[in-house]
Length: 108
Image (cartoon, rainbow, N blue to C red; front, top):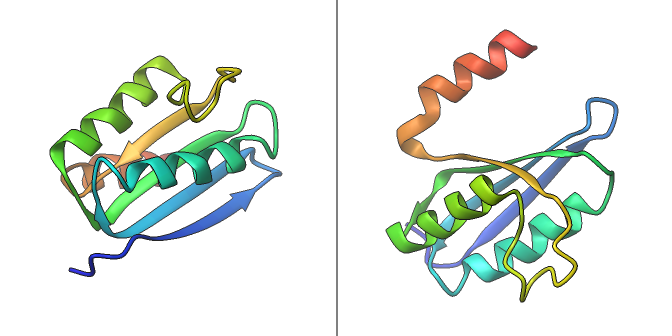
């Protein structure tokens, strides 16, 4: 697994959805950079649904816990987004690919 974090953002403004796909190693330090990318994607459109795809990454458990906390609270950490803008995030990780893939097929 590559130690560097690589991120690809795909946006569909017509459907108000964005996917932030991470590859490499996601640590509690590098997840901060991921938050910045998510914040920028979220600023493109009010009410945008964001999917953070971690299936191509090795994610440290503490970093995944932080991402899940953001998903539950609908906010990024205050140091990243001091205004605490609503951010609808869903996390897709290797252990959840089946159920999310089925959900995406049903909504397509």
